[in-house]
Image 1 (cartoon, one colour):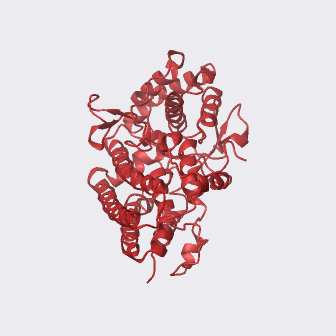
Image 2: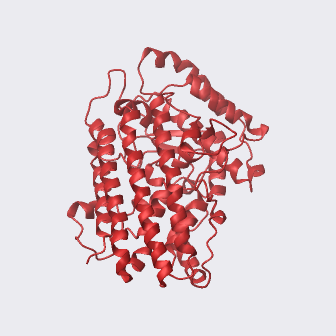
Image 3: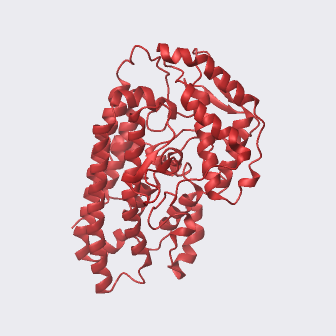
Length: 451
């Protein structure tokens, strides 16, 4: 059992599988999933109670005064004394009791966001001289972020939810949440490239709400055998194909708004999590906290997107290579990390992980239904083909922004900090990322129904 305080997806699925057979009522709100906004909260997160103002004030100050530890520009060096003062102030804080936040999911989410940004600002504003094998996280950060993470069932580190799902405000408060009415608030680098990256990720998530509606409609069907239900599934699959095509277009726009060099050298280092044992990156030691509570510290990744996991589960994409499907996995597929997707779920909010477990536990899959009804094979395969194309585009983007950049020398003012341990970048030259993404693409292809 890890620190999350909730059982893992397979355990939840087993516990739910019995009840699902008798009760097909599917209420996404039970999993903090909104019909109109999906995994996003329907409104911006509120400010924390005044007792926690030192956290929110420190986050504002960090964005104004801190620089990346490996940044050797004159401007960054001029900020070093202020950074040392900021970290000293954090070390001197009292350890705030988060008990009053219990039961208020939005305040817990806000606390996690603020503490995660403070944590990463604290670590990555330190100028490493190459001799450190560990960085100690002071108790005023470590104890409350672990406590809040346990309440939310997520990891005590920055996650995808912190950067994308919770980190926004409405441009026009009198209008509903949409991709055009959202502004990302907290930034590490202060660059528009970082804001644009969050915005593109948010646009994918919001478009994905339409996918969730298709999934929920399928699970709400009393049966999937009569002609009317089969016809509706066919229409929904055609709709889903269009949605996935739209997601691909959103992914592709990243190249128009995010500069690869700025992304790799100025934004991405801030997101890196703790180094593993024997890694060249210092491990993070959470003072005052049991090591068993800090097992998942990799940092945020697009692999933590619950909406993309939901799509994979719905289409029955076999990332673990447990099913006999053609073509057989290649040698590089077999060497890829087949546990990656499950591990990424540990960084999701616990309620969202339970939502995915509910989908896993369903006694029927749309792939099985399509296999049984010849009229559904073509629309099902069209969705899978669209998802395969999306993953091809994703591979090209990661190659441009991570793999290719990892082979280049850093700009003159940047000192390379080796061994960034974020899950999509570990491994020499980004090859682990390439293998992982290609394995995901090939697993998608194998879901195709054969004639």
